[in-house]
Length: 109
Image: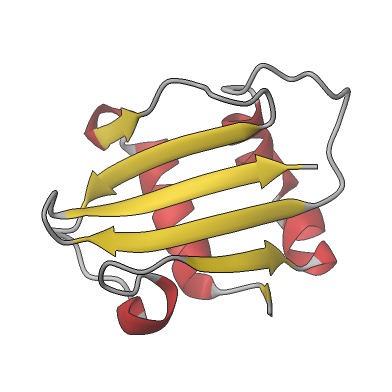
């Protein structure tokens, strides 16, 4: 299911605005960034985009990628940037209840 969710935008914007709140996992793949942030703030449609202990995978729509290129570029800069640029972005999300965190994994292709 392709996504252009306001909820996803909100979480990514919050992470960019508050980098001190973001936990970054070591890079395993050159084009994938794995992050987490405390689940203490409210997210609209949390049960859809951050299901408890389950993964939700979405491809961001072309419109979302085009409209929010600067925001996505911020996160792309954290990868190993093995590809010169990206056209598609996949986002994997989950609510990690034991860690009290939202998982966000961005895959740039």
